[in-house]
Length: 154
Length: 239
Length: 90
Image (cartoon, rainbow over all chains, first blue to last red; front, side, top):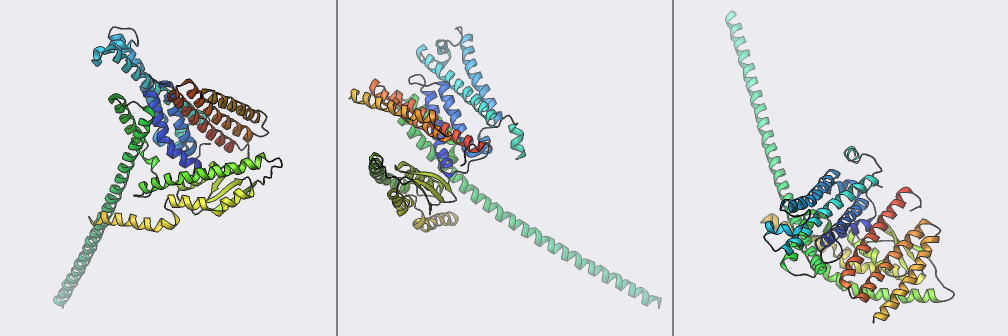
């Protein structure tokens, strides 16, 4: 299951589709506040794109683009963005995730600050969801074998 | 007597010294020769590395710019909001994605033929739709007749297409046409399931394959394209 | 016109039932996989018809694209799994 596929059709199609999948996922994240979608859904689509890459191009190729270590770092960064924005609101004298208070730093009206704050939180959620889904998929896909050692041995 | 012996000994010693000197000169000469060769070889290698590196960097930049332009068009199609904030977000996202995946979209594309391929591909679509409608009517008439005179079979044919993208276009065109489904491609041999003899005959006639080869400038156009590529490289070398 | 789309949607639902029959009683696992992926494409059309009926086509196009994408990836992963475990001869 971890080998690269030798099918020409599915490989070429995955190669062509991959940039569009990632761009679409970013679109879903960025337009989360006035169309369906948002951080979680965008993160899932991003992870789905990487799943497609793993299935068609094999583990080694995918690991060159994103290793498990990088995925761990990205998930931490996502949680940090989410918590950081919340704590920033707390420091500025509001409640946790009270985006209106961000207007003091961003120098915009509170309504715009709310929009921007939600956007930042959604980016954090998307990063965390993508990385965690990717790690879970990797763990299931390699069936519990230590994937990092496996990569070095081959 | 002793004097002659002494003279002989000195002469011998002198000869030995002479030979040693000649030997040393020879060794030094070969050493110098070797180093010169080594340097020349190194220079050549560095030149070649520089040249191929420049070529690769150039194609990488081309791929990056092409990918980001296509993705930005895709983004605008999706978004439908043309204020500065959303367009800026789109530009940032598309540049990021193009940076991460610039080697995927245009892998195995030959140099300098994208516009012609796009135009020919667009011209191919109406013909494909016509074929789909015709095959649809045929299959519907087969299925709706009470006797259902179908003759399922698997046909194999060897293709003359070479790049993966043209193989995929042909396979998907075959699958889109009702009555025929591509099962597998192994080493350039297509395995296609056909519903009836008429559909199989249509496929074996090979018109679709010829048209796909025409889109991607394969088979008959191959050599012209090779000459064009070589001319471009030659021009870069001369400048 | 809304009436027309409504009828088309009902017809699509009937087709989904046929595919569901194949997915439930399919003799082999490949029949089930084909049935499920056919249900996916039918659902996509139904989603778009709902978008036309509710006059929110821009929203439903986004949803249907995600649905198509996940259907495709699910199909590929399922095929790969079946090929690797050797439950069917490929």
